[in-house]
Length: 398
Image (cartoon, rainbow, N blue to C red; front, side, top):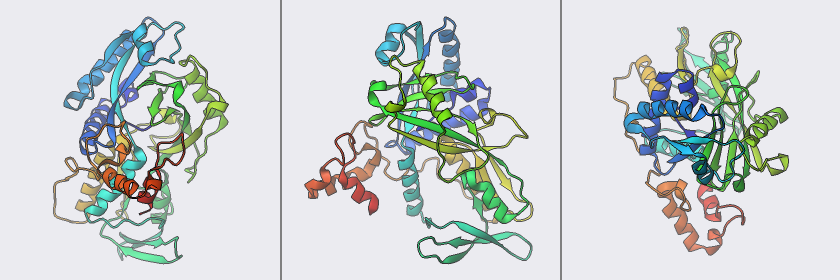
């Protein structure tokens, strides 16, 4: 949902430890990648008399848990104030609402900039090169892998003191490369989002629906020149490489969103749909995926010492990495060193106004602007309805 957040729903579930960790990591991420993370106001509309005080108290607790990492205090809104913040809100029966603040980020750009940060610190990055086998020493301990280069068809053997399996919803596939009888630890769950035109949510505030028919929360969020609406939580049997939304999931999002929008959205209004798989960690047989923890787990195979990190969410990625690498360093008998990522600036880090052109490129924006200045054709938008310019394509390729 393009959010770095503590998780209002996790607060509702009583998982205070996860909320506090996520709120702390949210604050660190805003500090370390200010070009990609910014504050966003959320409005929780109230249509029953008890909703504003109920959600207001919960969000005050959210503020308190954030402490020094807070993004702004929550506040009560009158019905008129809700309409001012969300001009397209359904007004029939509207009693008021609550405003709170969380973080929004560009997930794809953060992935790229994390890769560039890693490369700058000596990491070797390899793409289009899946692991097809793991190698082991005489005692059965994993000591490398065979990679398959999809660009030229070659198989590449690599060696390592420790292997970390951080493959998200596909981590059970790697665990079965290690041990063919490995029982699954992932309960994959599909989440779907719809992209609508900006006129469905023309202001700068998001809507948070506090409870849907399946017990989740749902968001409608301004995202660049569009609006994101979602998400779902649908258990799936496997983790496809290219997940696709079902009609039932699309209908569920539309039906829920239309209860809160003055103008209903239909299939003709959908500009695009995207789906992803959550790598939720199993908590026993059965149960809804919406109730499974978003916390992360680290597993060590007792035979091969393969380290698997599973679960988690974008907001806590840094803490997941710290835990996994600290453990791997111990297994590899490396000298202990403090983790530097709490204060490590991510590639492109630059405090910018998110409304500015090229803002999400951070410090790279100057080089992209220079490309456009050298060739006026590269300064032209790719399409009248889109903000991207041709220079960004050249920059991405290079």
